[in-house]
Length: 212
Image 1: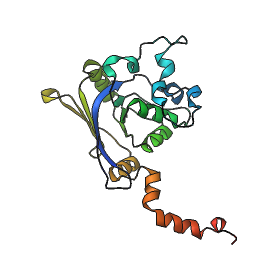
Image 2 (image 1 turned 60 degrees about the vertical axis):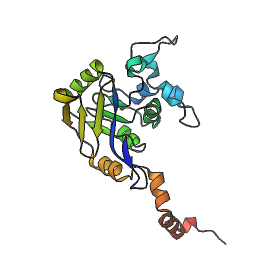
Image 3 (image 1 turned 180 degrees about the horizontal axis):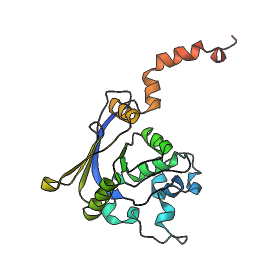
Image 4 (image 1 turned 180 degrees about the vertical axis):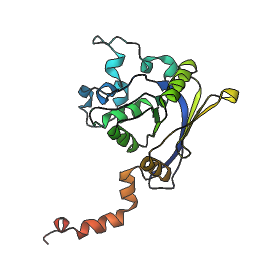
């Protein structure tokens, strides 16, 4: 991941690494992290439960799923299809993906709330056409060790090498692009960086003033 500390949070200009393809449209947040694993005080440890019901039977036997495959262990760029992250607004879904090791998600389209929850963690959600995503998924399946570069700043996804290098003109939503590249995606860091202004605003609110 290429980043710097120009803003209140690290700027996220690009993410590079190996990919993992999860095929299928309308994969919802309940598939990403089943509700029974959300009864936690912190998000620590959620990664092992990512796609749990798609990965294991009721007897905890492994199913055929990319997250179970040895060749994709250590991958950090998730490649998906359309309407990924639909369903409930649970923030546990991107939390589970991040704790599994995902730093960026490239797909055809994302549910708006899911993309917003990813942004709050500094995870880019980058879109491209159905044909381009299909080609990228096929590449990852054939070359699990191949590097994918997600250039947030220039809105490019590059994979392959030499004569076989492919560059996709991808799309990053304007608000997400600004937040990641300028380092203002972390609202907690943003508030800390503007502590004086926050305190002044709080002091000016009548319901924040004491009776003393």
